Length: 321
Image (cartoon, rainbow, N blue to C red; front, side, top):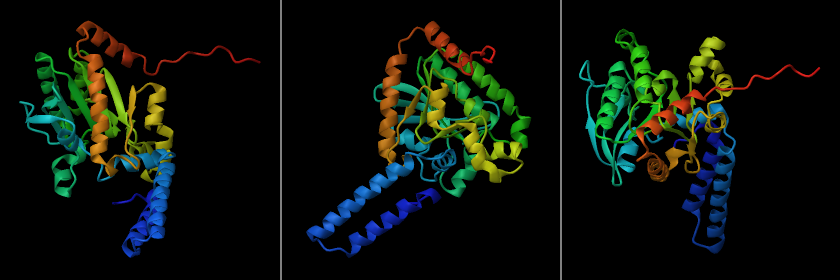
C-alpha cells in the first residue's frame, strides 16, 4: 500500500501490526493485542478521512491506485464493446467510449482514461482529451440517442489537453458544442466524477440529468495549481487555492452543483476497487430506474432547469442601520 503524506500515522500503525503478526505466537494475549490494534487502525483511518482538507482530498483523488474508467468498465459493466474514432481526425485514447450492459440494461458508457504505467499515461495524455476525443464522445452519444440507450459519463481529468495542436483543432469550440448537444439529447444521461473533475475537460461530458461525485473526488472550474498560478503567481500556493475553490463533495452538494455523493470504502476508493464499484453500480441502477421511461419533453425540461438554477441567489435589501 502506498500511503499519502497525511496518512503517516496510519502507515506507522499498519507496519506495527504487520510486525506483531510476524513475531507473535498463537497465544490468546497476542491474538487479542492484534485485534485491538486493528480496531485502532480502523478508528484512526475513520478519524483522518472524516476531516480531510480540500488539498488532501485532491491527493486522494489523484492516488495512483484509484480506480479508473477501465476498472469500472470491468467491475460495474458487462459486455463492453469499445468504439473508436471521430470520423474526422483520429482516435483519442484519453476518451474511452462503447456499448455495455448494466445487468439487463443496455447503455452507452464513456469516460476519461488516465492510465497507470508511464507508457499508458503518455498514450492517454494523462486523461486530458483532445478535440477528437470530445467529437468521438458526442458522435457515440447521438448513436445512443438513436437507439434509445441511456448514457453514462465517467469524469476523471485535470482538464482538456492544453497543447497547440488541440487549440488549432478547436478545443474550446468542441467542448462548447458538446455541452449544447448534451443539453438537448433525448435520452437519460448520468454523469459521475470518479476522480478529478477539472475545467472544461470535465464539462465536455458533464451535462446530464443527474450529476454525482465520488466521496473523495473533486469537481472544479480549474485545478488548484492552475488557480494558484493565476491568483498567487505560483503553484506552491495550491493548498490555499484548493481551500478557496470549495470543490469537495460536501461543498458541491451544499451548493447544488451535484445531486448525489457516492460513498467510498474507508480510506478511499483505492483501498477496495470492488466495494467502490459495487457502490457505483447500486447508484446507477437506482438512478436509471428513475430516469428510464420518462417522456423526452420532461427529461429535457428538468435537465435545462437543473443547470439554470446553479448560481441563482437572492439580492438582499438594505442592511439595517
